[in-house]
Image (cartoon, rainbow, N blue to C red; front, side, top):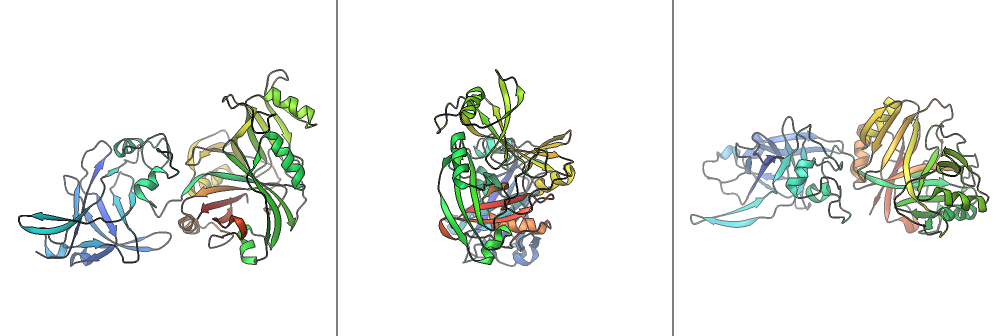
Length: 456
């Protein structure tokens, strides 16, 4: 027997609770023992090359990184532990026909005594592998049947509502090959007259969360938005779980009018929902806001189209959700209905958005429906418009969308591995009061700007 100090044990099952044999279990930690050399594997990820140590599960689904179990050949003896500078190491579970599971594991060794001999062991939580065909209803990377086994909700990506998604709670950072997009954070809407536009959006029901003056003098920080040094005034405004970041650029200022057609490439429209469209129309009439009826009748309207003071196109659709009056005390607008992005080539756009972490729902008749982990749906609509997406993020109108991520550094590496050009190679920490976050920005195939944001 070879006496090192500890062993690592665990088991792997399918989502029906049946043991899985011949699952490759790879631990990317520190290894001691003669078996480290014979069991060493190298895994190339977008961020780095990982050295791991691999064994297989036996018929009962168990595996043991075993330095001293009786009968274990010396050439197979391995102890897996932490690098002294790390809080965890990664483990990978792989089997043909099943989806890989990656988890961050922090060993918790306990002492045991059997037949007068002492040894130390740490037990890895049980792993349930999903077959390639199994359904994942909430899009959190864990199939429904596995969620039942883990005790999480198959239809909620954050089962307990604590702000930490199920896959994070179970596995930590997860696969180094995956993007970590979670939810729509905000639309950036650029305006020419800040106070006039703020009053307009407050009438719709948006409430100011914060108002700040921003003066970016560092060219490296400004490059985060692909701009020279800039100054602006901004106010994130909230309504029904949706945020617009209302911005007036002082310098550099681009006064070019927003898209005048809902078919123009990029983010041409803002689509909101209301509880009582007829009542809202009366408020618009009283405030000299003109609109066009798109669906329904004037006495029973379903959808109208109007514009903000700069001409950004807005759709308002009646959706009954018992929301009542909003904070304006006047209108019944209660949030974002959906997000439409016009694209010139639906096939390439669909591939792009899938690569950056969106789930594909369906594709038909020139439209692809996609969604984020929080369930917010986007529509990619093929358009033959010759008017391009905005070339710069300071253009009047919807300049960009921001998406929340939980691992921006990994996302950057994954995007770079897919050949997607970023405005900066590292995440930017804004100066001033918004230094609680980091962001990176890039463009889709039609140059629509997408910003990824992670809170520190």
